[in-house]
Length: 91
Image (spheres, rainbow, N blue to C red):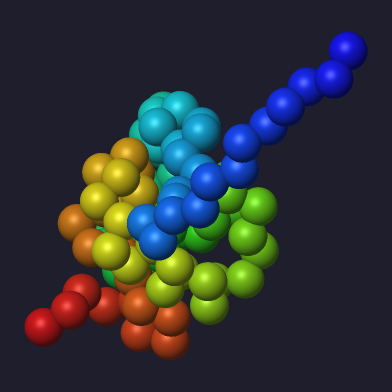
C-alpha cells in the first residue's frame, strides 16, 4: 500500500503545547510555587523552569522562547515570564 502525503509550509509560529496545562495543574497541586516562601520572583522562576523541563528544555536561557506565550503564562499561572538573568518583575 502506498500512502501519499501532502507537506505544506507556514510562516506562522507553531508551538507544541501538549501537556502544558496538565503540568501547570501538577505544579499547583505539588505546591511548587510555595517552595520559595515569600520570594515571589524565586517562585515564578521555579515554576517557569518546571515548565521548561516539561517542554524538554533544561537551560533557563531558553525561557525567552516563551516570553510572549499566553498559553505558557496562563497554564502555570505566572503573573509574568521571568527574564534570564533578572527574575524580578518587569518595571
